[in-house]
Image (cartoon, rainbow, N blue to C red; front, side, top):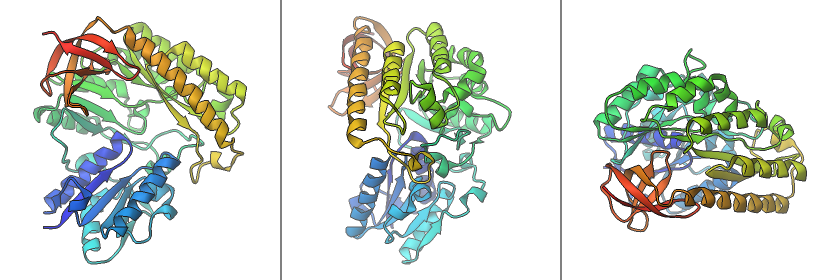
Length: 425
């Protein structure tokens, strides 16, 4: 029996694609193994959102080939920068060609090569029609759409995933029901931008959440990243949907810059003021909101004044977490053609922003000490302890606890990235 190993990189959406390919291979009679060393064929399900990630994956592909493995490359990299992929690979599949994974393996075994990337936009693949082979854990990823409605000048992902294609609400709901029947307690709604879900099919994320939270059972829903320019169009409706206890009080709302001129250059289609309006509205309704945002430092044209506006914004809104990215030009994007800032300056701004975000996160987390909170236990952590999440998706480390169970805990300590606690009942 031919052994196959899948390595997934990048976002939850990509991991879901990996699980679909795993199911197709399993049903075709291939043996899936946990380590590349055991496999004859390795599928590298790639990411191309950042230059360092791209280079890491390219090195990994070369390493596997040098060790005599047959390699199939899937994911975003073939669309964004195919030139970086070693020509010795056995197959290259686009993001809308994952249903051809068994054919790619057959080609590889025959010593032939399959490339299914050109004309990918013409394919109309509904991935919710594909089977899934998921780890037996606590959370289950449900893709709700592919592609987006934005045209950010720095983003290469849209070159891979294309224009928004929302999946039918009834299919999404059926997958959620299936996951709950299988014993999953946490549903991740995933897309390139959950905020524009349904705009192409006459619905929206709030309506979808209402259908999902009406499902019987004790489970929680974690909503993936949503962009401000879409959220503001149905903010009140979304707030109402978030009031259901089954929805984690967690909001990932990327701002990317605190300067309106930079936001225009980025093609973000909202203002800092609109972003802050969304944050204020959510925090007013949900005082314990766990707010995550993203900041890109060193974008072309970012002056010292523009950077300081980003710093001031972060200090003002006090997010629980800031994902700080150093700008790097991506192939095929508009911003890659503009004059770039020096690397040393980008690194310095990244260090400054990183220190600020750690300080703010620690100040927020310290306020949880002494509180009693309800949590969902995820299972064993990296250091032999137990990882759990609160109802606003704060990670908390416990000395013990049963995987997949809800429990009451008391917070005993805090760091900038997680809480420490113990079960009290």
